[in-house]
Length: 320
Image 1 (cartoon, rainbow, N blue to C red):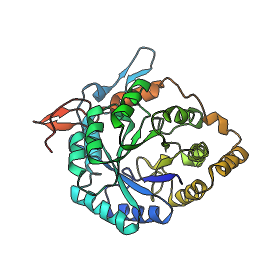
Image 2: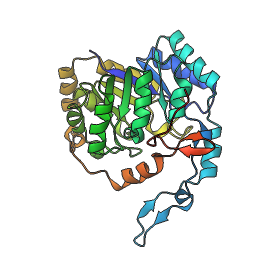
Image 3: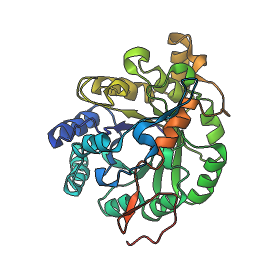
């Protein structure tokens, strides 16, 4: 079976439906299997006091990142898609001949999008251990893509047990933006295969500096899918532009993914002399930068119940 390619639009559409339409059709024309957006609602952003000023210790090392609530709320509110626009997105993907996909960031988000026609759902790595969210998603979709980057080994094991019986793919990723090739740790895909027959890779490397070698090496090692941030704008025109590939790069990745896996590996070994630096460790401690990101992004969004935030790992009775 040929690997799946996911073109992750994230918020590279800048809140514009016309830009998003262009993204959908150019992704479809250049080999994407899924085009993905993010079901972010700025109204679900949480205020957490420790991130207002952050914390740096006496040695100068950051202990808590600084990400004030109000500027982030204002930024995200300009990028919100309405539920009508999200329904349009699903329909437009169908018109373009590509499958729609979205990331659900809250349990209430799962409820909101359950009937929009998505054939599958994506769960971000910061929520791989949000077990109530996984349970909700599993009830609605048989196909799930679950990133694992910001998750500890024992949490992944529990997540796999909870997802048993569904068609799920774990995606290895590293939550450093951008990810240096020396920090990819692609050997972790092999460790993940004990839980999921299909294991993919979510790539956050910087194509201007490292080309497509991170994704290509993952595919050479048998990745079942590759998710890449994707843009039709310039690399400086969006927040995620620097870690995003263009339609031409997507086409190149499609052509590479369509080759037999043995041929992919031969090409990587021949044309990318430093490819083994990407392998790293199957069991690795999370870096300090990743722990900081986990601290902020895990809990960045929450369902609002009686006006109060309820996080994805907290049990509450969801009104469906």
